[in-house]
Structures are given as structure tokens and as C-alpha cells.
Image: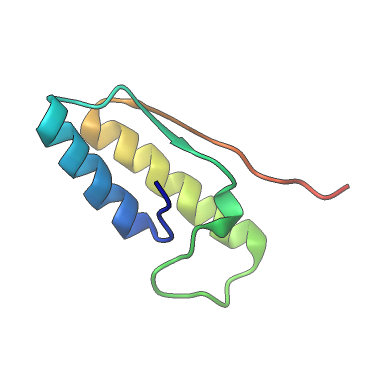
Length: 74
């Protein structure tokens, strides 16, 4: 499923968790496509930091693991 915002990800994980009795793993492929809710003008380092912090928070709330992939330019 395609999710563009962190808040949408939290909502989707909440729905899946309640439907199936829990979530074991959340995977985000290509982290840069996710948008921050408030400040879309932030540089890439700030965006990646905010989103990865949100994933860590999500994992703690739902008691699951989370992983993501990013593209790094040489």
C-alpha cells in the first residue's frame, strides 16, 4: 500500500493491528517519498531524521520492529 505521510502510516498500522491482533514488522521502502506533515521545506537530513524518529516511536507504541530503505547519492 502507498502511504505518503507519517500520520497515514500510524493510522494504517493502527487499523491492521486492531484487525489482526498485532503487527510484527513495519517496512517503509524508499523513505524519501514520505512527506512531513508540517514543514515540507526541511532539508533531506532533517526529513529523514524526523521520519525515522516517527518510525521508532511507532515501533515502541505497537511493540513491533520497523525498517526502512533510503537512497544515498554518492
